[in-house]
Length: 73
Image (cartoon, rainbow, N blue to C red; front, side, top):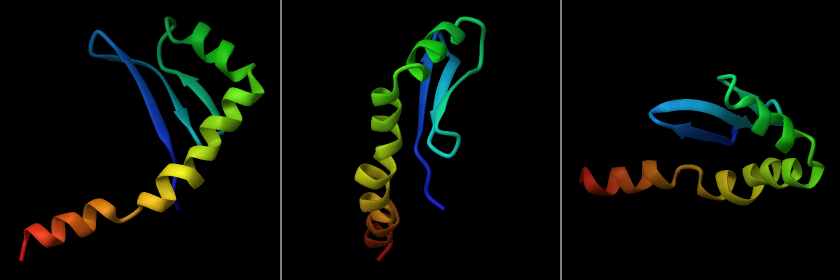
């Protein structure tokens, strides 16, 4: 199960995040709510974020595990 998480942090506090499993931005603070509401209302922006599972996550799945295994030889 692969998912894309995109976290937005300001002043060492997570304000909101995008979760491809939920398919939307989720506010973590009151300051993150206006941005989450705005971005969630933009269908093209949400579709772009959701597509990152297919375009970025799945093609790179296991890359870091493979690279780590090479360093342990």
